Structure formats: structure tokens, C-alpha cells
Length: 370
Image 1 (cartoon, rainbow, N blue to C red):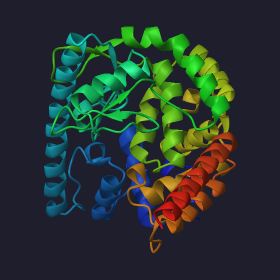
Image 2: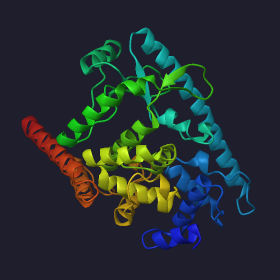
Image 3: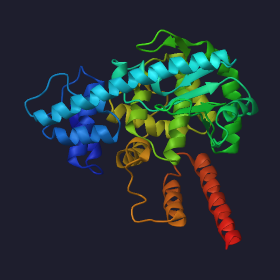
Image 4: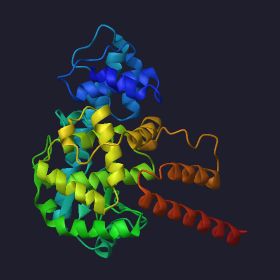
């Protein structure tokens, strides 16, 4: 059976035909040696790519006859802006690392531009903000940020560092936190064991001269899986992150696959890992030999529904449509979390408890005001 026909059979029950064709096209651009799908509605493919922040990698190398010139010109214009943005962010990263080094801090670049260097054309990946991991304790890092920007508040994951007016920067004292107390404790032990290697692993980003530290592929395989899990339960997970992981997985060896699978088990990420492996292999065309764990089609379809509906970081989700106010949105989010219980039960319960606590604190605050 042709891969695109197999994909259509897998997804038609839950996905409209235009989205199936867009996914088939994405699978083709990620695996250019395969046969190209017969796309008729290029406007929908472009809309899909825009929703998932994949505009740069989805444009055809040669314009097909079925693509309207207006669509092509608009697509090219968006790619030029993506490339310009990538050049700017890489330059800002170079400046940021120079500044942090002069101030006595060692830094490691997370996700984003480091992931882009794994792509066939790094400048075509849609960029986001800059995330850096600083090798210092929390009090020192937050005091440093507050000396420059006293009003910045600390979130669960990081502290915002608005050092540039044109590129957001987030500073992390640890690259990842999980909601579950037990899993978070295991994770921090794992990070400490592997931290030194990450700050020694250096690459040079496209268009700049200064080398910067980035996580190794083996570290990224665990860290980015956890990062996707957190986004999945919070804002939402998009295909750009899944495509990033597609390129990470192909850079590992068999011994690393076995070690990472055991780490998934320790961190309570095994079910989510199996779900994501199904999306990577059956939807995006990753070779089965690159799977860390056995794919799970049932769980995979469940998270794929959420990915397609919500788009990049869940920005396009309709789950809050018609739900105004703190409580209605909170209930909608809690229902979604419970629906995803089978994907990661430990993180699901911990996230739900955190949400309930937020609602209760909000309610108490309202009564005090009244």
C-alpha cells in the first residue's frame, strides 16, 4: 500500500480530506524520496502550514501547475520574512551569549535555533523566542534579571528577560519542570547527571561566527519529549515541535534508544512517548528503526486530534469558544485534561490538582475583594 494511501485510511475517520492531503504533503517534504501527493487545493496546504508554523519547510521546490501564482507569491513573501527573522534571532543569540559571558554566566541554548540547525535548510524553520538555560542557582539568576528589569515576574518554567526590543528572551535555571512532584524529582536528578555535557556541546548557528552551547541529541530526546508533554497539557502541542523531534530522532544510535526508553519509563513519559512515536512514524514517515519506544496507534490518534485542532502551541484551538470568564475556561481546560488521562496519568493528575488550586485561590481572592 502506498504511504499516502495508508495515511488516508488511518486518518479519514477523524480528519477532513483537505487536512489529510496537507499531512500527506508534509510527510512528502520530510521524506523527499517518496512519491508526491496530488495536491489540488494549495491554499488549504498553505493555511495548514501557517496554522502549524511550518510555512518555510512546506513550499514546493518547483511550483506545480495546480498552484495559483498569487498563492506562490504570498508563500515566497512569508518565507523571506522567516529567513530574515532567523538571521535576526541568530544575531541576537550571539549578542546575548557575549553579554552573559561577560557577566560571568555560562549558558546553553534550548530548542528553537538549535533545532533549526538539524533541518536541511535551517533558515526555513519558523523561529520563536530565545530560551537559554543558565548554569547558576535560581536566586542568583533571578536577582540578576531583576537588577535589570525589576518588574519581571517568575513563572513556573522561567523568567522573562526583555533585553531586546525585537526578540523575546526567557531565562531558565533548569531546562524543564514536570507537574508531578515525583516525576519532577527524578527529572532534576537526571538533568544534574547530564548537565556538564550540555554546556560543553557547542555549535555555530547559521550566519554568525560565535559558537554557542546546545544540548546533545540524546539530551534533547528526553528534554524535548518532556517539553512537548508540558505544552500538550498546557497551551497545546503543534506540529512544528513534532517535526523538530522528527529530526532529533534520526540522529541517535541504538544504544541511545534503549537508554532513552528507560528514562521515559522513570519519568512517567512512556505512554506519551508511544503516542508521539505513532505520529512520527505513521503520519510523518519516520523510519520505524528510529523509534525510541513501540508506537501506540490509539493514543497517537488522540494526541493527533489535539495537534490538528489547536495548531502551533494551541493558538487556534476552539475549546474555549463561547466560554467567557475565568471559571468557564477553567472547566473547559479541566475537561480536556481528564480526556487525556490515558496519555500521561501522573502528569494529568498533577496538572488537574494545580488547576483546581488556582481556581480555589482565585475564588478566595474574589471573596476578599467583595
